[in-house]
Length: 478
Image (cartoon, rainbow, N blue to C red; front, side, top):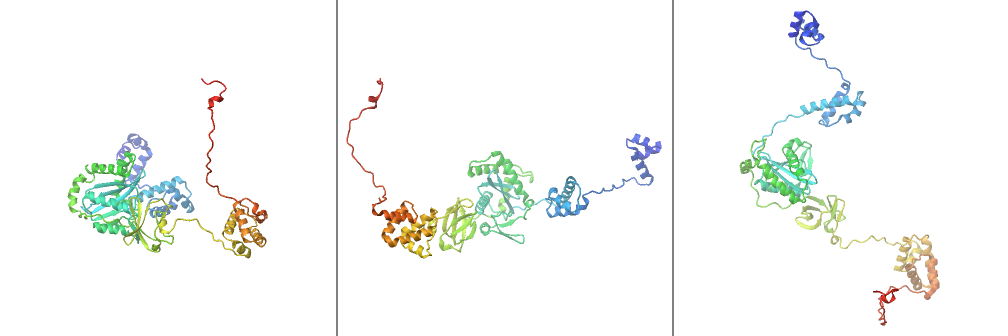
């Protein structure tokens, strides 16, 4: 209205522009709209972009990947679809569509937990330490403990400790699809592992699992994992042992649970007093360790666990056995009875008990099987012929078949006993030619025999007068 009024007073676009501090072209547009009776701003026309030809492709790929695809990966596909612009323009278009996807993909609503209902758990790793974090959803009590591994036995042991710390058992334990608690997935429905089912039945809670690849569904414990890393693990710089780490974790939990929580505007430790009355009572005893896994014993009398092999008695070949990890040992049981126990070894290693095989490990023996008449006759000379043949083959004797045939022919002239003695001498001196055996036979009994060294000869030496070394000095010794 100021522009229109200034134009009416001056009658000039430029004079009105000087008064209002705008461009004279702006004055002309405003005056023309006023004369048409329209003071609203005309809608701006959208400029065409060179990314419009692949806009539908980008939208589809962003939707399929839930906004995780990058423009770098899309560039080749966009080029093939007819895009001729720069990578920078494509990045802009992808960024706009990903932002729109994030804005519209999900409707978020605050979670109103019910007292005594949900406990949410998750694992995290920082600096080589595995940490189990748990949050009681209504009171926001936080439980943090460290462990050396994330197997089923460790998870259930720490979960039992968490129940004892809380003073009761919640109705539902919510976890992500961690492999140690998951037995399988059928049509996106998680089947809990048998050991986890037995554990839940003992304590009386219902196991529940989050949606696959959806950490937002358990954000309350995801936030605790990050908080424990930032406020406990990273400032500590590591610990010398798991026990020392858990001492620090207990002190840290007592500190944070005694402070006012910003989300619930209350102290979690005080809220737990009210919530504990709604928790299920703890059983009198902890359950027996649930099987970590079940395996079928193979024909090598072993089972595989953690990419390593462990032996069991041969009577269990083809049977299903249960594996339990206890204190760094793998206990193998069958129908409740222990059949083997091994120290845990690394991936690719073996832990074998000689008692499971009836004897100690021995090198493989390749049987000697004669086929030709010459071989049959030569090996008929006895064990010395077998040893002679193996040593000659190991030494790489050329034309060995011909050599043993010629050695067999020497029996006709010298007899078996003399030939066997000659073979023993040839074997002792590693002479494997027929000519060497013939030379030994020609030498006859005059050749010395090889004997093992006997005991040391004890001789009493006569006593003789001795002189000190000073007597041999060139100069007198003072």
